[in-house]
Length: 113
Image (cartoon, rainbow, N blue to C red):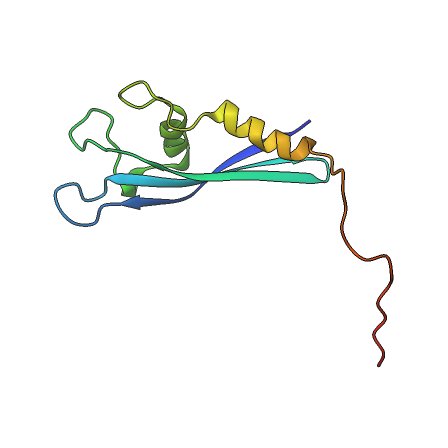
């Protein structure tokens, strides 16, 4: 059974102007672990923050859980920001992949001292 872990690696926020503290980009990663196997998928998602909107949260007060919720919720036009199901399916595909070829050389290399 695969365990998925979502993490926000960093956020970009405005530091000048009237929107100081407005988060504009979130860099994220989803990792999956199934026994000894691991897989990952990462991305960056942009936001168009409205500092006057109800529920606005500035950089200095935001939590990782809030940013993850923003990522998984649709934008104002109803478009998915991050398709959690699709990303986790991609990670699962990495874990399920079984190699059908191998590379290397059939002879051992010995170093002489």
